[in-house]
Image 1 (spheres, rainbow, N blue to C red):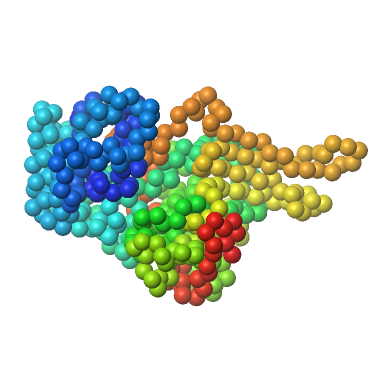
Image 2: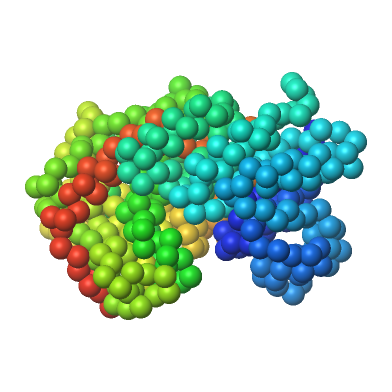
Length: 460
């Protein structure tokens, strides 16, 4: 395998420090990286070599005993820093010289993986400068590659998403573009497809004749923390609704692909978004709730008169034969009572004598405590024929075959290195999902903004 160089734009930010760099470190420790690799951080702040090394170590928040000290030291030895400005062409020339020097040290051209760990408003300018500078042209001809990793959200609405996608199409081949929705890389989420299509017990029941409703939840206990200035221009629906929740919806509802390669899976996910029922003012008023937690306006970077939502709940429908008239509830919020992500599948109640607990419910727990739970009805002990609910559970942590579950960012980076786009959003997925979300956003003003207390269990 050719040497590989990771170029991280915004390496001093939280995403790089808490997610990207720890993921690369784990890949390194588990011998999942090429034997020759380098990491180049690109940001505007000035550091000398030692200052930067100390920053990286502190940034990753490595715990005592988490890794062997020699592994951490050797890993940090692979990290370099290039100070520059995202909007200055001269900075990209300096970056090119740095990459050339690293390749000379390898005595070989290296593959280049550019990761845009920056606010989405900076994407377009960086992509343009990367292309104009020639940095995206493989230095080894047919022997190497360059790829770009882009974080969500991909745009702000349908029009900006189309504009960004058009720009990407002008600058890069589709095979070079890796649009990250790290939720797709979560092991428990991938297991939904295996569970559905490998168990004949469930797939025949996976339709409107047997399923009453589906509830998808992504709850966070924390507030916006230090993301206030960025989050306030995005809001909960754009931040996690357009990507994480809709991707979970697609895995629950998609048709069986012809095979499980990248093209087939991404086409089936996109088909779900394509047939989501679009909204108008009336449906948004009836089916959407939005709210903001108390104290949000006092968070650092948040505008004083903001109407940005930190919570939403919406009801939607999929307009195809399998799911016609089945309601899907998507719900997410910050500063709630607990952090959890799960999907509840409610099967129709055939036990009319037990309306309250008479349903079979299948729950996919995505995080924390990844696993699957099924609520069955069994006979209560005694002389009668009363039934009561009991749960059957599977937890990844209890299985010897799942001693180590790869972090989502480990899987994202690993698959980007090997060129597998299965767990990355396609152009069609981005455009169709934004088309649906924009039909809500364009009618936001018809929905009053509620207020809820931090740590709430039930918002509204």
